[in-house]
Length: 214
Image (cartoon, rainbow, N blue to C red):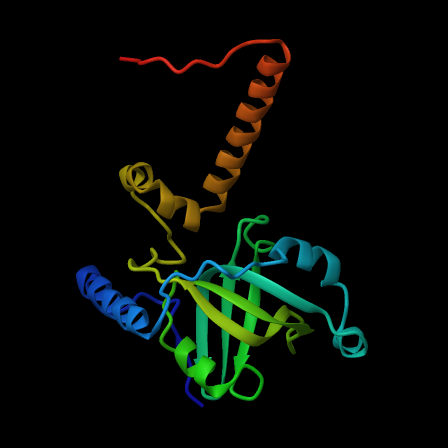
């Protein structure tokens, strides 16, 4: 059985990768809606881990737990008739904000599984299915329905090193937010602080005015 791990850097220059992904997006547009907006995720990875990490498959078999999740694909493994993907949402620290998807010909469907094989790292996926534990004890979603919600046109940085260049971090903050849990924590704290200050000022009848600055 061969295994394809797309977490490793592709042996192509970035322009070639972008061109290939644009071609995939063009094909998706020809087939239908490229960026569907009717998918409504109902569960967050962190809350699923908090609620179900302690359960075993016996519990899931006795009382199946259906979930609807969405997130950016950070890891992908294709193994014949079955594949794994790890998606990341914004619900928690790195581990808790991710959940694994299990895609198979039998449960997900051959067409959906074949389509998944052409998805790229960084794509945003929506998945429906039921929870179970893998042999290694990882909480996962046995996918019954899978959709591509957003096609990523640029490759993600290397998963082990992330963004090393400080200038690039400032210039491409959106990429840093995808790859760095520390950066996400910093901006969450900043958002909370700004909201708290704004609420205090509003409570005391201050008025917020935007003025030009040099």
